[in-house]
Length: 366
Image (cartoon, rainbow, N blue to C red; front, side):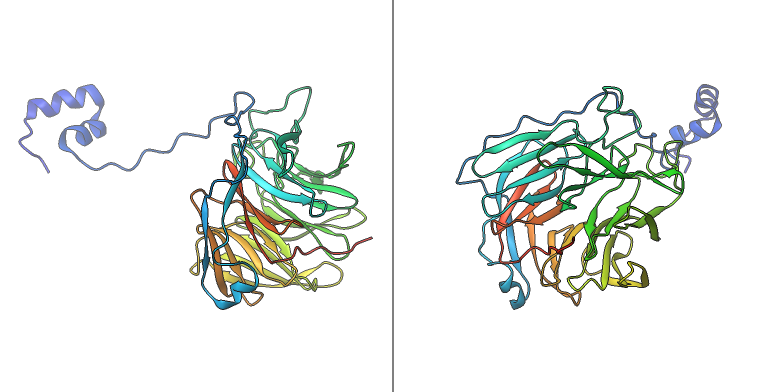
């Protein structure tokens, strides 16, 4: 609307800024939103805040929410959600190593560390750099997450989704020697492997989105033009099982007949999985309308899914029913069931834990 706009004022604005800008500025016209600036390159090593030396009693940072009586078999409704470790830029991929007196390893994807924590010894840096490490540099201007992401036990050591290294690799838990298992598919570099799970025959199933790159969906840093769900067979042959819009977490059912993955636009999907590791009959497991989210996930020994959602961690039964959740004051990316009886949550800049009765799913592979 022209609102007492003089001809002289309009001409002056036109000359100074051009017709379109003048009309928007002087007349008050609504213009289309500006194109967001391109992602900024990483300019050096990234550093988290100094960690806190937490001691019991640990501060609380969440709440257990029971939605269905079946949740009582997994967690007490009055269980405390405790903050035990911090100092991360982005915590991911927690894995418990050993028995009741073992320890937790956690990726810091952006700082390029794997952090170790135990109630006895507290927090320390276990491996640095953990992912990208080329020519003495632990960072790359094109890689947003130079560190590791998903961590699981298998093949006699630690199996790693190497976001920054753009590979799946094995770490010896004693020597920390790295052995790359796969970094290319059909001659092209993987994107940035995100999460992984071990199957009953020793196959490694993993997701490969480009989330760890600064230019996620386009640009010269990507070789593959799709985001894949892959199976790395025991002989290290790599098989593309399916492509997805936004794959993230991945899991296998206790009987080895179902494969699951999160896919943010639709929720959580599942496939039938045969004994050869092939998938078929892709379908929704839980729709996004049930609860928002879709980061990583864990399947427990009873077949329940513990999924990172907008709520925190949401628990779905093997039939896809939502029976409870752990809410937190920061987002959750992944979780782990420890042999010490706690569920551990990688929650943004820190790690939380809460007592659980659930048991971790572990396949006995040769």
